Image (cartoon, rainbow, N blue to C red; front, side):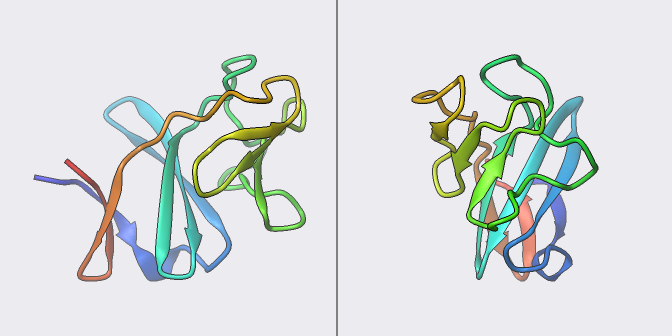
Length: 106
């Protein structure tokens, strides 16, 4: 059985939202009808990515950004393309959209 995080409409297109699930901090990025989920930990210093709640996207709207040191990650696969952890990746959290709800995929 999968856990519902929120309704898709609760995350504006191009935006992100953080969640705490079973003691693990994760976040979801929405791009159109697709969602991408990651554990909220930078692979460089193992710190949370955002400085302000739900603020995971850079000013261009094209990348996930680490507020600690500015590393940039691709939204679609979490790969770091700039910064001290270049070549590493965020840990993926499998998601599904069912009946308009964003859920953890089992």
